[in-house]
Image 1 (cartoon, helix red, strand yellow):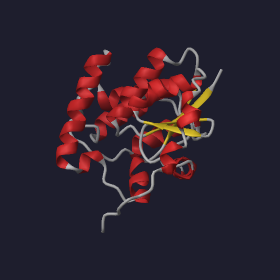
Image 2: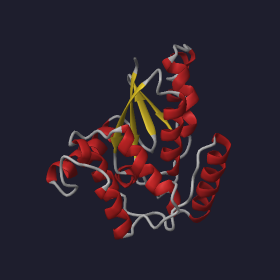
Image 3: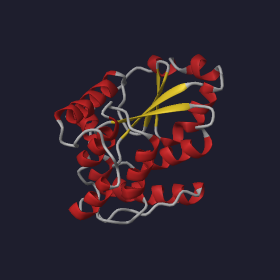
Image 4: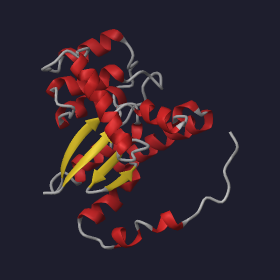
Length: 211
Protein backbone atom coordinates (compact mmCIF):
# COMPACT_ATOMS: atom_id res chain seq x y z
CA UNK A 1 0.00 0.00 0.00
CA UNK A 2 1.45 3.43 -0.95
CA UNK A 3 2.56 5.62 1.98
CA UNK A 4 1.98 9.36 1.89
CA UNK A 5 3.07 11.92 4.47
CA UNK A 6 0.57 14.68 5.20
CA UNK A 7 2.20 17.85 6.54
CA UNK A 8 -0.38 19.98 8.31
CA UNK A 9 -1.17 22.57 10.95
CA UNK A 10 -4.51 22.57 12.77
CA UNK A 11 -4.74 26.30 12.11
CA UNK A 12 -5.66 25.67 8.47
CA UNK A 13 -9.29 25.05 7.45
CA UNK A 14 -7.99 23.52 4.23
CA UNK A 15 -5.97 21.01 6.24
CA UNK A 16 -9.18 20.09 8.08
CA UNK A 17 -11.09 19.62 4.83
CA UNK A 18 -8.25 17.59 3.32
CA UNK A 19 -7.95 15.38 6.40
CA UNK A 20 -11.66 14.64 6.33
CA UNK A 21 -11.58 14.05 2.59
CA UNK A 22 -8.74 11.56 2.54
CA UNK A 23 -10.16 9.57 5.43
CA UNK A 24 -13.49 9.32 3.67
CA UNK A 25 -12.34 8.64 0.11
CA UNK A 26 -8.68 7.58 -0.03
CA UNK A 27 -7.53 5.85 3.15
CA UNK A 28 -8.66 2.40 2.01
CA UNK A 29 -5.94 2.25 -0.65
CA UNK A 30 -3.31 4.64 0.78
CA UNK A 31 -1.48 4.58 4.10
CA UNK A 32 -1.21 8.14 5.39
CA UNK A 33 1.30 9.37 7.96
CA UNK A 34 0.30 12.56 9.78
CA UNK A 35 3.13 14.98 10.52
CA UNK A 36 2.28 18.17 12.43
CA UNK A 37 4.31 21.24 11.48
CA UNK A 38 4.17 24.91 12.42
CA UNK A 39 2.67 26.84 9.51
CA UNK A 40 4.14 30.11 10.75
CA UNK A 41 7.56 28.49 10.49
CA UNK A 42 6.98 28.09 6.75
CA UNK A 43 5.76 31.67 6.47
CA UNK A 44 8.84 32.97 8.27
CA UNK A 45 11.16 30.88 6.10
CA UNK A 46 9.64 32.03 2.81
CA UNK A 47 8.88 35.61 3.94
CA UNK A 48 5.13 35.36 3.43
CA UNK A 49 1.96 36.50 5.16
CA UNK A 50 -0.62 33.92 6.10
CA UNK A 51 -4.09 34.06 4.50
CA UNK A 52 -5.62 35.26 7.78
CA UNK A 53 -3.18 38.20 7.86
CA UNK A 54 -4.54 39.73 4.64
CA UNK A 55 -8.00 41.18 5.29
CA UNK A 56 -9.85 40.28 2.09
CA UNK A 57 -8.04 36.98 1.65
CA UNK A 58 -8.97 36.14 5.25
CA UNK A 59 -12.65 36.75 4.55
CA UNK A 60 -12.54 34.73 1.34
CA UNK A 61 -10.66 31.87 3.00
CA UNK A 62 -13.36 31.39 5.62
CA UNK A 63 -16.18 31.74 3.10
CA UNK A 64 -14.56 29.28 0.71
CA UNK A 65 -13.91 26.80 3.52
CA UNK A 66 -17.57 26.92 4.52
CA UNK A 67 -18.61 26.42 0.89
CA UNK A 68 -16.21 23.51 0.32
CA UNK A 69 -17.41 21.88 3.52
CA UNK A 70 -21.02 22.22 2.37
CA UNK A 71 -20.24 20.82 -1.07
CA UNK A 72 -18.27 17.88 0.33
CA UNK A 73 -20.70 17.12 3.14
CA UNK A 74 -18.05 17.90 5.76
CA UNK A 75 -19.46 19.74 8.81
CA UNK A 76 -17.54 22.92 9.61
CA UNK A 77 -18.03 25.71 12.12
CA UNK A 78 -15.60 28.62 12.24
CA UNK A 79 -13.77 29.21 15.53
CA UNK A 80 -14.52 32.36 17.51
CA UNK A 81 -11.15 33.90 16.67
CA UNK A 82 -8.50 33.24 14.05
CA UNK A 83 -5.55 33.19 13.71
CA UNK A 84 -4.70 31.67 17.07
CA UNK A 85 -1.56 30.14 18.52
CA UNK A 86 -1.62 26.45 17.48
CA UNK A 87 1.50 25.37 19.38
CA UNK A 88 -0.30 23.57 22.21
CA UNK A 89 -2.53 21.68 19.77
CA UNK A 90 0.42 20.60 17.62
CA UNK A 91 2.43 19.54 20.65
CA UNK A 92 -0.55 17.63 22.02
CA UNK A 93 -0.77 15.62 18.80
CA UNK A 94 2.94 14.81 19.01
CA UNK A 95 2.93 14.14 22.75
CA UNK A 96 0.45 11.30 22.33
CA UNK A 97 2.99 9.12 20.51
CA UNK A 98 6.27 10.91 21.23
CA UNK A 99 7.47 10.00 17.74
CA UNK A 100 6.86 13.18 15.78
CA UNK A 101 3.95 11.55 13.99
CA UNK A 102 0.33 11.86 15.08
CA UNK A 103 -2.41 9.25 15.05
CA UNK A 104 -5.42 9.57 12.80
CA UNK A 105 -7.77 9.40 15.77
CA UNK A 106 -6.11 12.23 17.67
CA UNK A 107 -5.81 14.37 14.55
CA UNK A 108 -9.52 13.91 13.99
CA UNK A 109 -10.29 14.89 17.57
CA UNK A 110 -8.19 18.05 17.43
CA UNK A 111 -9.40 19.08 13.98
CA UNK A 112 -12.98 18.70 15.23
CA UNK A 113 -12.10 20.79 18.28
CA UNK A 114 -10.90 23.63 16.07
CA UNK A 115 -13.17 23.46 13.03
CA UNK A 116 -16.45 21.90 14.08
CA UNK A 117 -17.34 23.32 17.47
CA UNK A 118 -17.43 27.07 16.89
CA UNK A 119 -15.55 27.74 20.13
CA UNK A 120 -12.73 29.97 21.30
CA UNK A 121 -9.83 27.62 20.59
CA UNK A 122 -7.54 29.67 22.85
CA UNK A 123 -9.77 29.24 25.90
CA UNK A 124 -7.73 27.46 28.57
CA UNK A 125 -10.66 25.50 29.97
CA UNK A 126 -11.66 24.27 26.51
CA UNK A 127 -8.09 23.19 25.79
CA UNK A 128 -7.69 21.42 29.12
CA UNK A 129 -10.87 19.46 28.47
CA UNK A 130 -9.45 18.38 25.13
CA UNK A 131 -6.05 17.54 26.60
CA UNK A 132 -7.58 15.46 29.39
CA UNK A 133 -9.44 13.37 26.82
CA UNK A 134 -6.19 12.29 25.12
CA UNK A 135 -3.71 9.96 26.79
CA UNK A 136 -0.17 11.07 25.99
CA UNK A 137 3.21 9.40 26.44
CA UNK A 138 4.89 12.76 27.03
CA UNK A 139 3.93 16.11 28.50
CA UNK A 140 3.17 18.69 25.83
CA UNK A 141 5.94 20.90 27.26
CA UNK A 142 8.53 18.14 27.24
CA UNK A 143 11.66 19.28 25.31
CA UNK A 144 11.39 16.13 23.17
CA UNK A 145 7.94 17.19 21.99
CA UNK A 146 9.14 20.71 21.19
CA UNK A 147 12.16 19.34 19.32
CA UNK A 148 9.97 16.95 17.32
CA UNK A 149 7.72 19.80 16.17
CA UNK A 150 10.75 21.88 15.25
CA UNK A 151 12.39 19.04 13.34
CA UNK A 152 9.10 18.20 11.60
CA UNK A 153 8.90 21.79 10.35
CA UNK A 154 12.55 21.80 9.28
CA UNK A 155 12.03 18.53 7.43
CA UNK A 156 9.04 19.97 5.62
CA UNK A 157 11.04 23.01 4.52
CA UNK A 158 13.91 20.78 3.39
CA UNK A 159 11.37 18.89 1.26
CA UNK A 160 10.20 22.19 -0.31
CA UNK A 161 6.90 22.35 1.55
CA UNK A 162 5.62 25.93 1.50
CA UNK A 163 2.02 25.59 2.66
CA UNK A 164 -0.46 23.37 4.46
CA UNK A 165 -1.78 20.88 3.84
CA UNK A 166 0.96 19.31 1.74
CA UNK A 167 1.34 15.67 0.77
CA UNK A 168 4.61 13.94 0.01
CA UNK A 169 4.64 10.86 -2.17
CA UNK A 170 7.98 9.59 -3.45
CA UNK A 171 9.93 12.75 -4.33
CA UNK A 172 6.92 14.92 -5.09
CA UNK A 173 4.96 17.43 -3.00
CA UNK A 174 1.28 18.07 -3.65
CA UNK A 175 -0.06 21.24 -2.04
CA UNK A 176 -3.57 22.00 -0.90
CA UNK A 177 -6.79 20.10 -0.39
CA UNK A 178 -7.62 20.80 -4.02
CA UNK A 179 -4.59 18.72 -5.10
CA UNK A 180 -6.08 15.46 -3.79
CA UNK A 181 -7.50 14.38 -7.17
CA UNK A 182 -4.11 14.99 -8.77
CA UNK A 183 -2.38 13.07 -5.97
CA UNK A 184 -4.79 10.16 -6.30
CA UNK A 185 -4.23 10.02 -10.06
CA UNK A 186 -0.47 9.91 -9.52
CA UNK A 187 -0.76 7.11 -6.99
CA UNK A 188 -2.96 5.22 -9.45
CA UNK A 189 -0.17 5.42 -12.05
CA UNK A 190 -1.33 8.26 -14.30
CA UNK A 191 1.79 9.01 -16.42
CA UNK A 192 0.75 12.62 -17.01
CA UNK A 193 2.22 13.74 -13.67
CA UNK A 194 5.76 12.57 -14.43
CA UNK A 195 5.51 13.72 -18.04
CA UNK A 196 4.61 17.26 -17.03
CA UNK A 197 6.15 17.70 -13.58
CA UNK A 198 9.28 19.52 -14.75
CA UNK A 199 7.56 21.83 -17.27
CA UNK A 200 7.15 24.72 -14.79
CA UNK A 201 10.95 24.72 -14.34
CA UNK A 202 11.28 25.94 -17.93
CA UNK A 203 9.31 29.11 -17.24
CA UNK A 204 11.80 31.88 -16.46
CA UNK A 205 11.16 34.72 -13.99
CA UNK A 206 10.27 37.71 -16.11
CA UNK A 207 10.29 40.40 -13.44
CA UNK A 208 10.81 40.60 -9.70
CA UNK A 209 8.89 42.93 -7.43
CA UNK A 210 11.09 45.30 -5.47
CA UNK A 211 10.90 44.82 -1.71
